[in-house]
Amino acid sequence: MSSNMTRLTQEFVSTRPSIRDCLQLGIINYSALAREICDTYDLNQFDAVLMACRRLRERLKKRAAHEKKIVSLLQNAKIHAKTKMVVATISRTRNLEVLESFQREVRQDGGDFILIDGEEVSTIITNREHVPRLKAILKRRIKRLSEDLAQVSMVMDPRIETTPGVVTYVYGMLYQNGVNIREEMSCWNNLMFIVEERDLARALEIVSF
Image (cartoon, rainbow, N blue to C red; front, side):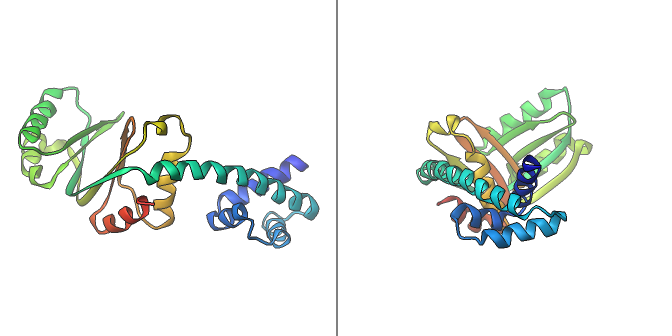
């Protein structure tokens, strides 16, 4: 029964970020939290749930210490932003010559080209000025074209590679502040993501730490 109380307590807290944060900081009424969990799951094990809440708090304290290490890495990140970006979702093709040709043209013009190759579709991230050429080359292969986007790049300390939870922490902060990530990619210590242009200022404020 105790393990079941622990599981339900973790489930309740993990799906409610505001409660999780208060529990992690130790600024919550444990009895009130235990009663709420009992009411939610129709439990008659108040003492067991209360104990599970206190044990969870101890685990979250250790997590808070680890998050300080994450924030330390993020505070020293170099941040770059690009506006007027577009994301094209295209049907996946084995004929890469077409994409390579487009990439060369973009690079020669000093533009940006990122290809994310999925199982069923591929995604191209480039600058808005290259859209006419993109449409001319790919034509009906384009399934969706999203404009008015911005790209944020974070270049971090190489220790990010061996520090668990960095990406989750960044994306969690953006989520909690209502910033939606349209696309995301990474390359070693470089984390990049695409947001709506209207969310760019808020995103930069959040990831500046």
